[in-house]
Image 1 (cartoon, one colour):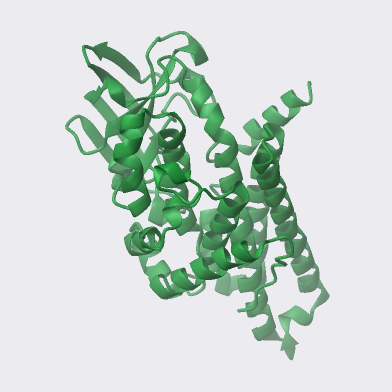
Image 2 (image 1 turned 45 degrees about the vertical axis):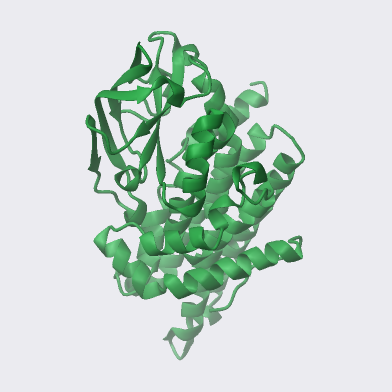
Length: 384
């Protein structure tokens, strides 16, 4: 399969990141294995551990915590490469390392960091972030999960919904209300042992992302040490916002890498598939689809590396990361949809990967802040 990606602007080290991680994933997670895992709905344990063993889990963490001290652009390159191979392994990585792990890295106590960061980096501890609830999706400030202090512990009661990878998590990052009725002001984040009594995790049957599916999480009188509070009491919203820029950049990286994979995969098919005595890629109607697909793929990368550079420069790029998340995820799904149309009836079967790519891409404009919410943020920052 050819690669249409233009790598101008990447350093020699970043090119090595891309080449090394693709070589690793092609070895431990070939196409047949991906299809097998998708059909069975199984987490990619082998590939995840191989990434950990190769040191990739610590790329974006500071050296003082055992990480490699990589830049945001290094992280974007890594995730884009993983998503080029398979979006599911990039999601598996993001869930522990970015969505949940950044809370430990940036806001946990010294003791919690010293205990958990080595386990996160060596792959022995997987995490999941529990924020969304049945009655609190886009309106995250209206969560109802409560945490009440009892001596040196907090007792947590509530329910989380659509918690990605909770079924394989050793620990949960749980967003609670410690001061109910106070909106953003009363939110507190806790680390919770996912295996303890009172924690019930129920997998959900999802349209796509079968290897990193979402779950319901029930918390029934769950006790967690007060020392496991992440950040300050009642200041959880501030910590959530602090981690959002990197989270959105990483979601954009998944969209960018996967869009190029769909483009290359479909282009390879169009050059081989013949109708009316010639390959379908020779027909202008198909060529125009590919032109549009290539422009969308390139646009994703431009947004991705732009926001990575801004974050590395210390910019609070809230608008730019919101735009990157919208553009990359919407383009990812649109290109997958166009790709399936080019495949025609064959694409609607499970014989080809394009149907899985379409299913997996659809969550992008919904998860981690819908496209509509991102547009609200962009408009607000334009003082509308």
